[in-house]
Image (cartoon, rainbow over all chains, first blue to last red; front, side, top):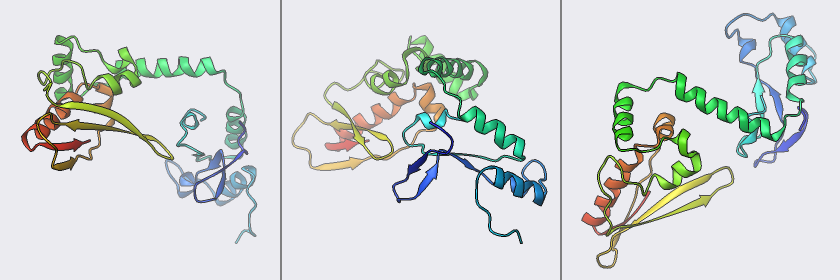
Length: 52
Length: 168
């Protein structure tokens, strides 16, 4: 098993075994800068739309 | 991180990384293969840690003490499966079970989990009614595994009193 293995849910949606939770981006426990958030998302392998 | 994925109901785990280094480090950890025997050891350690470090509520402790006096085994001593199956038929702190009411235990296998079902059938006459008891059990209660007999006794009593098929 690897982090990027896809698994199909009953709804038909495919998700990776390891995925990115975003509670930290909302400032849970400590603040994260916009640039830091962008870096984490990109590092996690997600394709981003143009940053607003 | 991979521990929850050992349950078939869990398909994906989400982690809230705060930095790119956390992403890299945790992806590396996630992709580290772990031998099957190591999982067994981990579960044992977690079970023992839970037993040692989690302090039960005073009411729970009182029930535990009663159970210990009756020489009942805890879940950590007999295993989760045995606790789930055999706690229904042991002598218990709620008193002797009613031998005239038969208890049949089955599992409904769902897409995500097995749902235990107990069917209480009174001995006398043809059952005219059915009573379905949906109940949950908080983790602590399940873990203790010694509260179940109270529910068993109550459902037995109901089956006998109202001459009904009682399903849990």
